Image 1 (cartoon, rainbow, N blue to C red):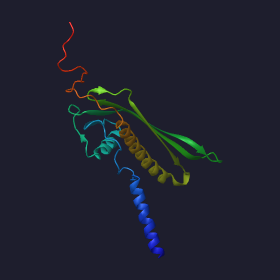
Image 2 (image 1 turned 120 degrees about the vertical axis):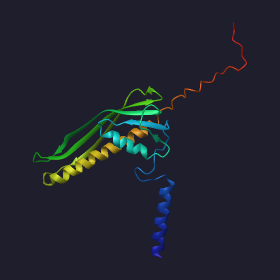
Image 3 (image 1 turned 180 degrees about the horizontal axis):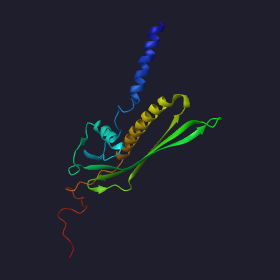
Image 4 (image 1 turned 45 degrees about the vertical axis):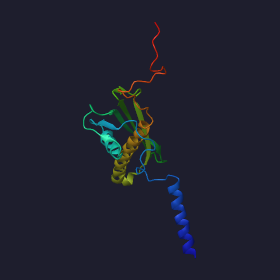
Length: 185
């Protein structure tokens, strides 16, 4: 009897989580569609560019192009800066925790028109530190920097989803005047 109740509780928990829209990080896609169907990512020498390209490639409705001419949107990583600052020290004066800060500036061009201002993404994380685990902490820091860049790419894509869709060049804005109206002399 107890086993059946546990099974029912687990099944109801699974149904409740699926009903509320719960999904694992990176598996659910953005909640809003992007305002463009094709994109070109100028990777350059930035470390964010390839991660941004990889994150955009997960969107099945989006076409990633290898040239900017045919793309509806062009994303360019203008700058990126990472810093490691001492956050806390212990009573012996040794570092106990670092604050890792990452900032990237990205320019977006939609339909040939730059979106102003450039998007600035900031991500901060704390890294516990111990002198006895120097090699392990170096590896942990490298993994954390990579995770920070992934978070920055996902944050950028969420922001891109809220940009207004550019006006289609072939479609003129409709006038409120009737089609048979005569201009006044």
